[in-house]
Length: 216
Length: 277
Image (cartoon, rainbow over all chains, first blue to last red; front, side, top):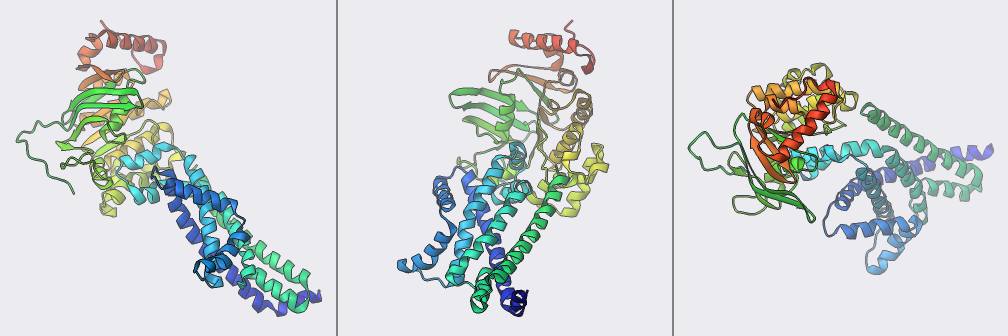
């Protein structure tokens, strides 16, 4: 029990880590979703560069995130691109999950009935307006559980960024354990905090589920 | 963006002109050299066996399908191709599509929007009309199809007949010059067909210009100004309903009507049986 008292005394460090994890995950989620939606539009189009984006999605889905983070932080400088750990971490998390979001949205899009989408064109909607007003909302409602799942994945992936010394939650827990030699208490506390985050995300997905239910 | 069309000087310019329109999917020819004129206030019923190209013709009119050749004009204005002879971009196509209302076989309502929002969406987001005005108009349209009490309901909670009446109100909300109906009652349970046909008949009486693809022979006989009979992608016969149903000019149309007669005498739910006396 004494160990948890030590963790409590380091709560400022832990909370800062939690704050950074939330910040990273939130930023990555928002940007990855927006970019993923655009990539999904391209994937569903007949544009010639569609294959390029399909290739990007395939590659990202086959690379372990840890390795991808290494490449962005340690590998890109050899190509002359130097990023600090925050930019590298955020870029890695965002780009990686853009691919997943695009694939999730593409799958949900394929499962949508085609008639209301046609009706959108028939009533004069075009381009991004058509996507935003007609295609995306029902897509979001039906894909919400899977997107929620991916957001949880983003939160957990952000823990890998401890390897590039990003002061997020896992990094904080690991400094506490190395400073005081209390691995169990430090890591269990971090796990509980991650779990809390997931509960919040699931609650949000639940709200979407109720919105979808009303329209089903 | 609208290019003003040269005034023709008479009031008899057709609302819709389809000229020499052809369309093939792959090597299968779906429409061949279709010519059609629809004048203001006319109700044209497109009849024909399934697979005869009726729905494709409707979709070619507002360019949901791009015709392979031929022209479509709305009140003298070419659809799909600019006056400069190049294919219309999205913006021009959108502008002209808002002048043509479309009612779909499977309703095609937007599931995430309420009934009222469905009706208001195109006027507000595409035509950029003031929201308060669009809402007032949408409410009065919903009242005219008898659905005022459903305005805040989502489409999924409506019956088929109610959905289709919303579909009609949604099309009317754009104040279209022409209404296209793609088998508006064929996805409905028999007892719900009537409530939708009542609305369409009223539009016909009010002078709306309409092209209706239908399998409802009673409706076509009584509401159509002209019948256009399609078979295998060609217009086989164009006639006034009284002569078409009583004495079709072509063998093909006669066979078609005979099949309907035998099926409608079997089911008594559609009212009086056909007679060809």
